[in-house]
Every structure is written in C-alpha cells, then in structure tokens.
Length: 272
Image (cartoon, helix red, strand yellow):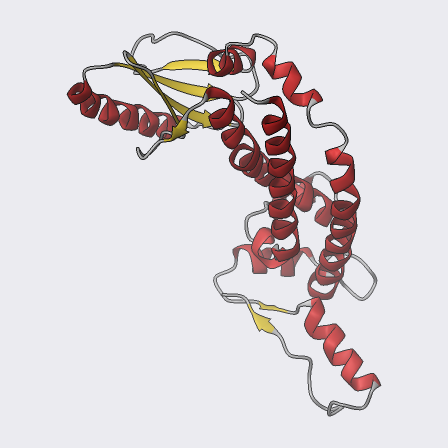
C-alpha cells in the first residue's frame, strides 16, 4: 500500500463526507423531521423554547445521518484500498479480497450498533446466498461482518454464518498491521478543522431557519409554544398548512418594495 496514495484517499474521502453532510443539512426540512419526533416527550421533559427543540432535532438527525454517510464516504473506500480488495458485485458485500485459495467477503459497517434483528438476518441470508455461488470456484469462503470501530468480535458461533470483527481486529485483518487503526486517525491531519469552519456556518444558518419556521408555525402571540397545534401537525388526521420562512421573507420583501398586493395573504405550503 502506497502511503501517499492512502493519505490522498483520506483527504478525498473527508472532502466527500463533508460535502454530503453539508448537502443533507442545507436540504433538510423542519416539517419532515417534526413529523417523526415525539411531541409528548418534548412536553414531558419541560421544553419551553423553540431554540431547544430545533437544536435537539438538528443534533439527533445529523448524528444519525453522519454515521451512515461516514461509513460510506470514508470507511468503505479506505477498506478497499488498504486491503487490496475490489468492489464486490454481490448484494450485502462491500469489499472482496481474493487469493488462490480463499475468497474473503467483507460487509463494512461504520460501528457495532448499526444492525437490528431483521438487518442481521438479511446479512446472514446474503452471505449464505454468496456462499452457495462460491462452490463453483472451489475456494474457501470467509464472510466477515466488519465494524470500523468498537470491540465486538467473534468467530462463527451458533446460527451465525459469518465472522464478526470490529475496530483494531478488523483493520488488522484488512491490512496485516495491528496499529493501522491508530495510524488512520493521525493521517487525517488538520483536514477536519479546515472543513469545520464552513460546516459551522451552514449549521448556524439551519438553526436560524428552523427556529424561524417553528415560531411562525407553532408560536403563540405571547411567545409560548402552541403544543396543541404542534400535536395536530404531528399526529392529527387532518392536514395542517405549513408556512416556510422563505415564503414569508419573500412576501415581506415584496411588500417592502411595493411588488405585492397588500391584501394578498402569504402563500403557504401544504404538507402532504
């Protein structure tokens, strides 16, 4: 493995990661996320500020989204390069490493907490399907579920049709180097700091946009939260109109410049 090639890939992978998360952040709609939150829980824990709600929503969403994006943009391409493997054509397999006698099939996951029971069964079935096809090439088939961080590791036990390797054990399996998992974090250098400045600006803009939309749609005249309206929007059978910040600002700007009929109501986007 060429060290300069690896370092270049790390930089490009981090670029890809930040571009994807920026896109997620700028395209995220508060109306979509609010439909998936628990209003009863927010009320029960004593939330009273719009800023508290939108910050919690944004953090929870981005944390979940980042884990998935990072695995795809960063871990998978590095696993392929450092192992000398190829992209597998088989469903459920990300990296294939083949020798004269052994065919290793890696399913690369970001961390050990990605799978639920149904996903684990699907992974089991996908490995078994590939195992049947491998009989034709007369090679030992070694399926591995790899977690790029964590400590969960095991040989095939019970009903598992594959090995599980996590953290140091996975990276050593891929590279032959027991210290690669540590080298990987050092090779990031200062690239994350360079990206962070741009992301923080987009983050602040999203918070401002979300807080404005929340107040417009669920704020009472006295500044309190209209929990009943929020609940109707989140759980009611009838559709509740959604007023976006962009529509309000466009209408206000037009009124200031005399480009809109004063009697015309602000347009509203109806949430489907």
